[in-house]
Every structure is written in structure tokens, then in C-alpha cells.
Image (cartoon, rainbow, N blue to C red; front, side):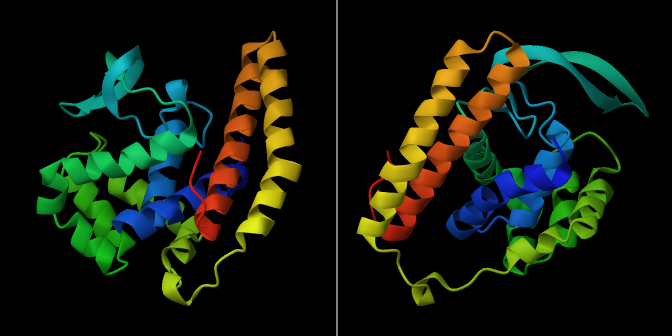
Length: 216
């Protein structure tokens, strides 16, 4: 997947999470890019390398001045959207990130400081983790996603228009992608169709959010 294609998919999710939690969209996108190789290596839809149960595979850790290969357990998700949401919940639930000042830096829209706080709090073992995050944000202008409009001033989408778009375009597209996923014989094609199907579902829920309709 090209970097811009990854950004186009993840950015709306990251912006939604920034509205909900205050975690900078630029940080979320950059972390996902690093941890998944721009979406190319996200087994179990785990974009952020969050450890847990559900699957095991070989990963690289920086230990005693060297990068080493280890087998680790990692969380799994139904979709990339689930991974993005859980990434926020993971940072909120672990007090070391608040103690590091991460959320204060996010509040000030300071992605450089936020990246440093993540490294200081031990998110990744790579000693250059913060530098890599900052480079990705700056080279792709991801900080532009951190400037949020005030939601109260934003016009709501008419629920009827939202339902028309969902029922006329997104539901048929979701069904077509789901059919292709079930028929796929190749694992790479299946993964691509699953990603496409999940994207349509996310778009539909975004329209429901914008119009005040309940999610499905």
C-alpha cells in the first residue's frame, strides 16, 4: 500500500479519535505507519503492535543496544477502525502515558513533545522511535489533521440524505466486497477485499455519526 493510500484510510479514523480523546491524529497516523509498515504488516488488523492475546508472530525489539527477534503475543481486531479505537483506549488506560505528559502535549497540539513522551513512557524499544514519528509527520504534513474545527459550528448532515447515501451506495458496495471476500481463493486478495469491506462499513458509520443516526 502506498503511504498516501494508508493516510487516506486512517486519517478520518484518527481525526474522529482526536475529537473523542484528544490524542493527536498526526501521532495516531504516524504510529500506525511505523508499526504496520504503512499497512503492509498488520496481522489481525493490529496497526499499532499492541501486545496481548489472539495471535503470535516474530517481532523485532531493541534490547541491550541491539535489535533482536522475539516471538510475541499481539491483540487482534475485526477491522482497522477497531485497532485505531483500541490504540486510544490503550494510551488512556496505561497511566504512564499521562504521567509522561503525553496528553498535555496533545492538548497543546505539540506533536514533537507528544512523540517524545511516547518514547519516554516506553511505547517502543527503538531509541529513535520519537525521531521516526516526527519525520513521518513532517514529511507527510500530518499535523494538518490536528487542526480540528469546532463541532458545534459544523452543520449536521440531513439524516435522510445520509440514509440515501448508505442504502444506495455503501450497503451495495459492502455486500459486493463481502461476496468477493468469501469467494477469494488467495489470502492477499481476501485481505484486500476485507479491508475494502471494512472501509465501506466505516464510511457508513461516519455518515450516521454526522447525521445523528445510531451506528450499526
